[in-house]
Length: 240
Image (tube, one colour):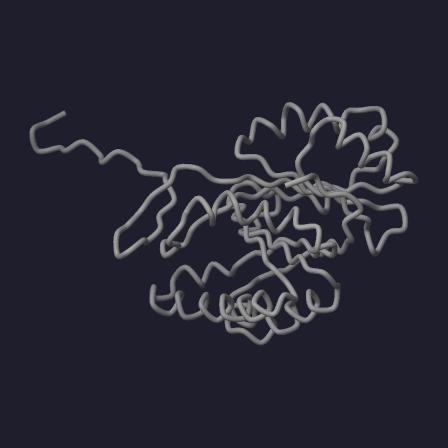
């Protein structure tokens, strides 16, 4: 290397937050994997197998398929999905089921740079929402953001995202719905950018959130696709 060449700066892949005016960082995040199956005649047996294997997560009964189920599992270590979870999915109970690849979702929690408590944002809240026994209904779906969004000025991007944030806060404060937002860049076979989970005590408010989102600038102008949507009710959730 010549004297005029400088070494590249070390990569910092940690998530960033902001606490009392100071930038904070945390190099941890939660991965979450959603898998759906059909031809399930005994979902209670699947729930028992998950409990026996000490799986953390939720098992949903599919509202649109009388023989369908959906499973969402979180782990800070993605190796878990190709070890313990893979072993469970190769159990004889699952061999009788029909995998629904159109609903496969794998994402990770992320920060946007302004969160005061990164551990709470990245690791605690997604689990709390997923495993909250009061949040029995759920809608899970991927979305693909238009590439044009990345060309917008940073201030414009923040205004667009704040509009969505305000909508989510209104429903959350009222106790109608909570959202789980995951990034899936490079993790999704259809090149989707994010996974959204809407969870709550009843189904209608979750549908109303999506309806209201249609009116926002991001959804109306800067999203290329939404869905497919998995709609289900929790039959089993692991203890928090």
